[in-house]
Amino acid sequence: DTAVSQTPKYLVTQMGNDKSIKCEQNLGHDTMYWYKQDSKKFLKIMFSYNNKELIINETVPNRFSPKSPDKAHLNLHINSLELGDSAVYFCASSQGRGGDTFGSGTRLTVV
Amino acid sequence: GENVEQHPSTLSVQEGDSAVIKCTYSDSASNYFPWYKQELGKGPQLIIDIRSNVGEKKDQRIAVTLNKTAKHFSLHITETQPEDSAVYFCAGECRAGTALIFGKGTTLSVSS
Image (cartoon, rainbow over all chains, first blue to last red; front, top):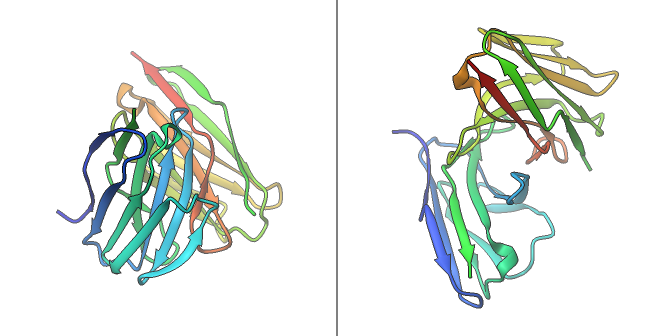
């Protein structure tokens, strides 16, 4: 199936831990994104990568570090997790400025 | 930067009725306006989009209109069905051609 796939689907962890979310797209798109959706369903861009190069970093704390080993992958590493990081994180990709294709999301719960 | 406002936040209609969701944007340089449908537990899915050189676009029961002068665009769903129940998001471009800025979403409920 052609898609944006992210793992894990659920992540429950304690405050202070470090965790990673992986994302892969097989659509051949040149741009990948991380979005955060809070408890009120508000979707906000965090990062945008074009061909492995960081394009957008929307005032996200330094504890969040995206890494793009190639244009098909964009992983998100989070250090020193805080309660406020609890949210659903979506990976997405697009070709040029077309519609973003979203993954199914990772629900992160920090306890 | 771009700011996108979306109304209403909730919308309840009877099956077969029409539903209209409206959005306004702030950046006159924005040229691309997609609409997404998000079902419970899933990621947003693109349902229709419009570019600034077009005033209206239709795909079966779904249509989008764009008024560039007034900087607003709307989603129209006709003959609504219970499976149309979901959260709908409008979006506009951030910094012309990069990421999307989303409205706050509209929860549409279609009752049979």
